[in-house]
Structure formats: structure tokens, C-alpha cells
Image (cartoon, rainbow, N blue to C red; front, side, top):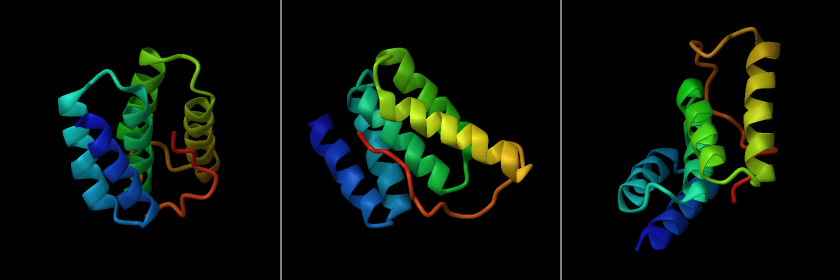
Length: 105
């Protein structure tokens, strides 16, 4: 059941329905908090919503569960680099992301 929720979340994310994706991913994590790919994809949603600390935490959780997710390292690195370059820090909200370069798994 959690994989169905995770797949539905990915479909919402890919179609730009970030609020719906957030709800579905949170449900998937309730069903199975140890599925690293859901945590990565939840990070993408948080990033798209401008919730950068939560995005970083979700990416970190994914990597804690499974350290070989290259796409997650890329997502976390891109997030951290973009926040430093933008000078906004994690407290700033810069609007929704274009999702370019983001890697769902």
C-alpha cells in the first residue's frame, strides 16, 4: 500500500500538484517510514514549496536509510548550493521551484 501512495505522490509532484503530493507522501511515510525513496521525493516536494529546512531533513533521512542514493546526494547538494548562492539561507522563501535538475527516485 505504501508504494501505491508513493507512486501517487510522484504523479502529483510531476504534474505540479505539490500540496496533494505532500499529503500523499506523508501518508506513505506513515505506512512505511523506512522507504528511502519516499523520503527523497518528499524532499523534492518540500523544496518546491520553499520549505528548505524540511527538504534538507527529508533528503538526510533518505540517505540515513540508504546511503547509495546518488540522486538524493545530488538533490541535497543542489539545494544547499542554491541556498548559499541565493544568499537566502534556509529561513527565506523564494517561491516554488521549477523542479529542473531534481531527481525523483
